[in-house]
Length: 420
Image 1 (cartoon, rainbow, N blue to C red):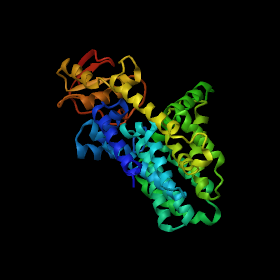
Image 2 (cartoon, one colour):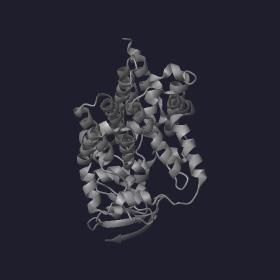
Image 3 (cartoon, rainbow, N blue to C red):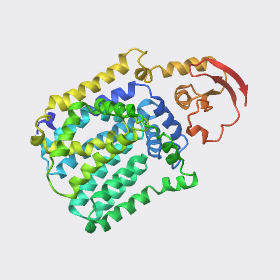
Image 4 (cartoon, rainbow, N blue to C red):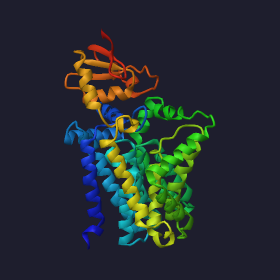
């Protein structure tokens, strides 16, 4: 086999490049927030299920409390997910060329590269979702109990990653015919057992993740959010890949519940988030994992979608966009907000540390507090006072033991010093 045409070689090469980026780029605020979670392991948190914190704890245990330690689970998760996606294509009847196309397209997408170098709940959700796609179509085609159990394990892992994993369950229920329902019940039962720690935590904590996320919906018609979400999807998936996926969803004619499952796994999340965006802001990354199922269909249906099935459109263009985003982070001007969020945190923490001899730095937002916690020198830590009115996990944790504190604003300017 030509090494260049090997999916394994492509995955390894792309993972190496991502690792360089991950190791040389400072954490974003959300990543630092999840690191704070990982230092207080639990079965659930205010915003999300616990998988992201568990994985970060494993990564920092193995590789140290560094950027690469935080992001190593993301690099590995997306590499595995990309390979599993190629197995989805094989299960659909695709050949080795279809497998390589799948790996190439997924590896080039800005959405996938972001999930690989930024450790967020989207990363374990992406891996669990792709595993669920593979196990789901294998179960729906072969109807073996062991595969249904694997399907349940993947669904449970998805439920431990992000609340939107429930859409995979709904997709299964849409396609499970009467003869398949007992088997589907096995999968759902296994998923419930796997996710039971998170369910139990919710019962003990008044289902705060669900109520927290529900409060994001304002029920005020704001169509501008919908167009912002659409523009975000075009940016992180690229227009040509979106056109390819839409064409594949329209033209796929192969019968079977497994194909319907892949369709629903794409259409349902996109439709739901599109509807939500009419009354609330939806981040572009939230529906990103949904594109994988239809992308696998497109890789198999390559001749039928020939208009858009050209590597320069579906691989080269997304790769160029991904490279441009990396360049923006590394060399872009600090005045660009998203680039600034990826740079300067270590210097900011050093400046704050030099301005006070206090052990505890108090700042209004959880984002700034989390970044300071990660980058402050040993002997100093930070906490959020919650004065920015945005609820966070800091509000659920008990206040830290009494230490000499110093209050700073979001710009790193001292505002008060007090004993607590």
